[in-house]
Amino acid sequence: MKKARGNTGKREIPGEIVVEGKGLPAMPADLTPHAKKFWREFVPALQRMGVLDKVDRHALRLMATQYGRAMEAAELIKTEGLVAVGSQGQTVVHPAVKIEQAAAALVFRMMEHYCGTPVARARQGLAMLEAASLAKELDAAFTATGGDE
Image (cartoon, rainbow, N blue to C red):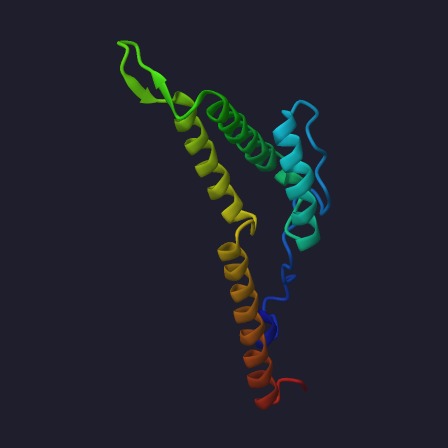
């Protein structure tokens, strides 16, 4: 929009916001094996998509940790089963089920912010398409009014 008006304030038009610089954040050394696997698969994919800033390392660490927690809980459930014996001898849902569900929900929510799901990627693509379409409309309007002079 500012480009269409000719930047009347003469201030720099901000481009992409980069906090610490584009690039691959270093993987924390103390991640669990499952969390490391997640990091090795997911983080480079995000870099290829161009959505990473090095400042994202903290959010990515949390996401990898929760992924690792969900996988560890899943392994425990696989070994011990979905149910356990409660304090009074009754059958109860294994506590690891709740851990797995909570961790998986957190990972899923965080992945939505990093284009980690088909819906999130579609949203991002639509936003980029709308921005490109708006830019074309503004350029056409700007050109039609003789704004190139």
